[in-house]
Length: 320
Image 1 (tube, helix red, strand yellow):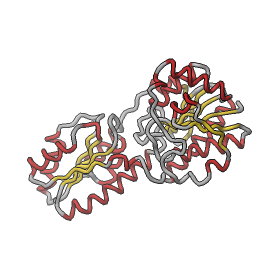
Image 2: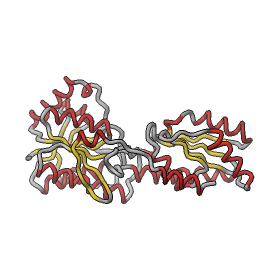
Image 3: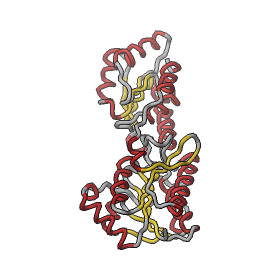
Image 4: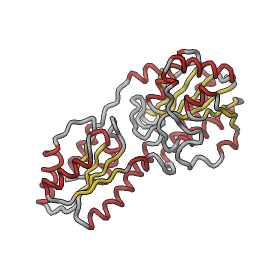
């Protein structure tokens, strides 16, 4: 293994730059050439690459986003596009590719590896929905961002005795909503993995706390569970409490990564390069029980991740 490529794909996540930095510096320290691939698989198909050196990744560990940029590629979803990407690797002399991204990015890595290009995936997504890994790069930063934003919204919510329905990212995964909701003491947390009864879990719950003297409320909802504006209207109509909606949106993707994300990204990037140097297998890097490990791509993609019911129970029990 003499030359490796590195790309970021799918939604950006804080800590991706720390992972890129780790990959580049570990590769160079192990006598490898490291090629930066811009705009994910789209850039690989088009050959939009450049050779990286130690100074290419100076002063990026604290930056959000990704210096390699990210883009979704419709062409790469086709067999023709995948063959073009594999051929470009051979033309450029790239022996293997490190892919930093989420589940869709790893499916792309699987297809590329089937065409003879070794791929190692590093889980980078704020949604924390990679089943093989306890935590993904960007998740901790996103949770802290949500916590900080909700704390600010709470100031005006409390001042005006309102209810705030706060929508966070998570179309099919409720990890940000659950853990941030627990951290801010949300009255109710609604996530796509668990069924809920809006009347019982929100309206009746609020009425119960009103009887106990509570005058302001925070409801955290994952974006995948429905229309948060409609929910806010129902709450106001049925409880009489003035209710406002705040959709945090892409602010959750940005910002300087936390210590936890920087360390995790550095560990995973280093492990990925060392694995590529010592083995020819394609795999996904994962964090499990405090250790960095690797799994075969097919094995990793076949796993399913379930929400921690005990954490949900805790959040529900202590937020009344």
